Length: 364
Image 1 (cartoon, rainbow, N blue to C red):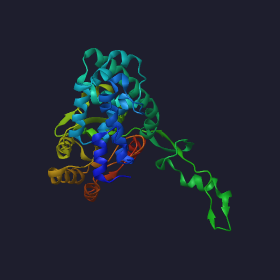
Image 2 (cartoon, rainbow, N blue to C red; image 1 turned 120 degrees about the vertical axis):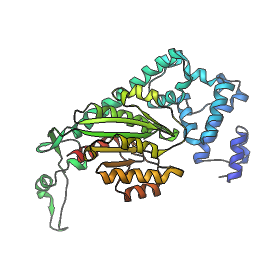
Image 3 (cartoon, one colour; image 1 turned 30 degrees about the vertical axis):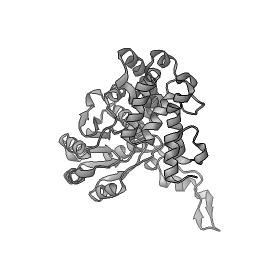
Image 4 (tube, rainbow, N blue to C red; image 1 turned 90 degrees about the horizontal axis):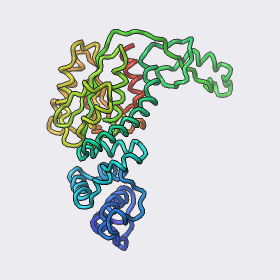
């Protein structure tokens, strides 16, 4: 284990500096990412890359995650201008043979500004394959949540809290009562399915932070918004924001085109997104605002809070999500989250399916 100063020298010197000590954790990942690029100085270019667990797509995503924006931009600049790495990312022959994956989707979104029309068309096809797979996995279960109320006569294999049937569960498990423990042992929890129900139309505004650290959330927000847009009970709008707000609602049915409009990176002005979302409210008690952000607002924090306060007081439902991906992992400013929660917003992290359950609960 090395101290911080020695670790920095390891990162600067790279290959050959092992004598200074071992690195682990994030520093080890940073070292591997830097070696993946800069070891080309001593290995004779792309053809002589030292063995690495990284691939081009995963490397692009790694440097976005591991380094500050200005450092990442410098590394990318070296990769594209000094080592010709852009040719590997944007080479049509490689794109024709590479296996579509979520990692490749991330890499394409990070480098699409470098692509000419031919490469962008190939990249669009790859994006569509990955997005269609995600849509297929999510669509049926999300629609089940959104298309009706609980039907106690029908059982559901989808074991989520909103579908739990406590009365039926108790009846079914009475045989498991333990006199010794004085408890009912639940071995077979039961969940109700949903029967179709038509609600009065609601508007849902999904506003997603498009700063570099939020890519996973941007992807899942676009997919969820597309599924919401296919529901007759929902009037769905999709916004992406950094320091400005881009209304992607015209592309909402096609998340591929929506994602290709996104410009990842840059600063963040959450209050601008909330104020724009507020302008879309027509019937407050039939409106949901879903903000997906890390909540690191800075100087505009008071305007962010004011916008949330106004919307909550108007009767709109406001949900603040730190992330929106399949794992439910979140990373956000806890103090800002607590403040917004105290103003009446709901705050947390949710998978797409959990978000659909929340939407259904609000509309019920």
